[in-house]
Image 1 (spheres, one colour):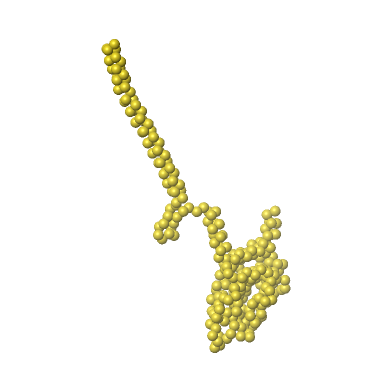
Image 2 (image 1 turned 180 degrees about the vertical axis):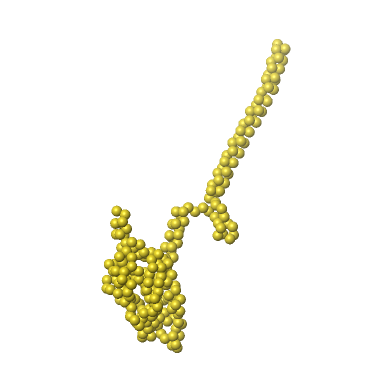
Length: 275
């Protein structure tokens, strides 16, 4: 009985000794597997972030003097942003009937159609004119500054106006209803690819002065008229405390409106041509 017990003890110890390496190997494998998974997960997450970040960055903008990285901007987003920027800084006038559109500075007054009787016009020199040689012209829109502009000066008003005479002829469109004593030098301007011809005009009365430019062009069976000018009050040699503005500078500023004028075929003509 004593020998048998020793044998059993020996076998038990031998069995336990053989099991220990197996258990250790299993534990090491499990630890190694867990570490490998966590490492792969961290690499995958970080790589995804880096990849996403790299897609959100582009090469350095050539206009960026500081060589800063700029985010990518899609063409659609850029167009929307430009339209929003223009809307924030300008007034858009568009007339589908005559195919006329233009931008005016925001803060100015955009008046569509005929001007009211109480409009400032040219002061004592009368209302803002149209210079079609024949009756039938229609004023489309007029831009004037807000009240209070150029306080403390001899400024009366400035304007930019667009009119149209449908059914006119090219020969009649080349004529202007400007009196001989107001007619100035001939003027030519290219507006939206169309050549406009006209005249400068000047008038003075009742201590008021006016300088303007009127242009005509015939297209789409329509005589288009664009005029702009500035009116002042007082005599240049008067002893009042009003500061004299530079009318020529204002005319140059108004002339920049021409860069934003678009003239297309009227809506009904575009519809007919595509049917």
